[in-house]
Amino acid sequence: MTRRGLVLLAGACVGLVGSYASARPAKDDSIGPVLFYRQPAKEWVEALPIGNGRLGGMVFGGVPAERIQLNEDTFWSGGPYDPTNDEALEYLPQVRQLLREGRYREAQDLADQKLMGRPRHLQAYQPLGDLRLVMENHDDPRDYRRELDLDRAVVRVSYRIGAATFTREIFSSAPDQVIVVRLAADASRNSASG
Image (cartoon, rainbow, N blue to C red; front, side):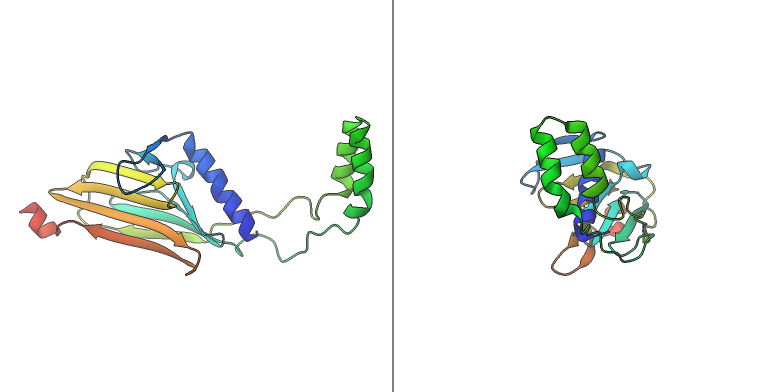
């Protein structure tokens, strides 16, 4: 899969999760629309995507255990190949002429046969693995929120336990070629429970 393919995959994932989410302008430090949920994802299509064109992940937002399913653009079921179809340019004028004549079915059939890249159907993209973060004594969270800031491309999970608010932010940096997970709390567990 190419970098462009991973970006398209992430875009498709945003489209999928969009049907499960509420999209509203953010009321925090976000500038634009945010998809947010009041519970962790139970299955892959409910997880929130992050990606930089090479590294990607689906963030489930679990408490007390977070799961981030990872992928990378060279991890797929095939091998290197060149999809260039050398005869495509030769048949492009014929396809255009058929379209001008209103012979759409013939144009489609010729384009399918002669203009498409090779192989026509790509290999399957594979998950690289899961990153799991386990937080001890985080069994009964309150005020849970899981969100994807569409402008900043950051997934944020926040919840309260006792008097402490815990926050995770996950994103993928293109310049640094890393996936970043930032864990924060506004109080220590010991001071929050006492």
